[in-house]
Image 1 (cartoon, rainbow, N blue to C red):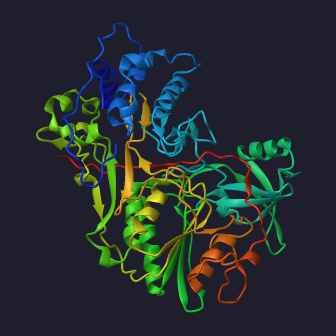
Image 2: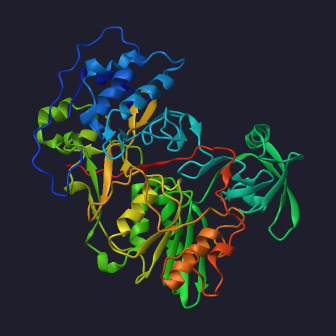
Length: 536
């Protein structure tokens, strides 16, 4: 076990705690108050200590910690009815996430209608090989993690009808790409069997086939050409860019970027900068940023994209603000609170995995600046793309967190429109907390833009509605959502039957009239991760 994990595990039983969001200039807050810690318990098991620790950390860092009961009333060690420690830990985190009620909905902020037994935002995972792996959801690995690490065939499918199964997306550098498979191709057979979504047995067959180590596919292009692909499952590292292009409509040069996930900035910067440099070279006047499948990722990367899009005239003005709870914001005001804080057991490491030195000692998460002023981020223009007229974001219920952050940050400063369907709704973020061999991601801060907007817990509303047309590839000007985006950019008006420069109604661009149905229900990463640390 790593030393910092052991420290986190053995120290927290000596700690316990008490104490949302403030405007840009917060009111004066009282000094942090530490709840009287429980008496040490002898012969505690690792599982019991972990149960204690999850709650104790929540009392400090959870965004809605003001709604949590005392340690004694909560009874963390009572979570022992499931067959494995992990399930008990996840149940405890779920219950923690359901205390705070959103007055606008009369339901918990973390209530998730699609999966009522899981938190909408927070989650807990078991680390792999001693390291936290971002992108592991409910102990299942996403097809591609937020870092772009895949271990599969590299594609997913969706059904338009019982007999029309389409490739939904293809991950870069995957076996599917090597075989020439593209989004929109029709899947005729898997392993020699005709595919159908008309029954549960048919859906189960496809799901199981996609979980295998090999698969034989018979597919058909949109031009009617049929071909076969024999794929072998493998591990690979995928780019976050599905597609980039410059589309022309009348006098408009429209930069198009389909972006899969906000991987960490070191691995994302080169490809993002290259895409926007190309847009600049080709005289781009407007942008379409396709985030329909983007569940978020690293805040720093989202900020980088925002600075690539924003005009240089916005330099120095507020982009967005992160708000931690009142206890976190005021931690520095009490040396006693800081010393007793559970966060003082979380060692701060640099990007090389080495402990950060601070004031002659090893820095901890209790040394970080959680104030509003210290977490206000401003525009710093990157690149030469300026004077963009319109920014259209293609979105869906899969668009979340860091994706929504980009949209929300730009809205007060540019003409921004959303095309597609309502977004997921996650104006909160987190950072990993190490407890024994687990990493806990509990909602720790909320986001607001420069004019205080950020309460989109039920998703962002849409300006132009439309369905995901899986019959066509990313970047295809006739794909339903892209066509509607082009029509708006070209005409500057929002109508149900807006036309592009050729006069073709957007309603005739798509072969599809209903939203496609996912077949595999593949878990995907959803989150907004803050890794930057400002010491006080």
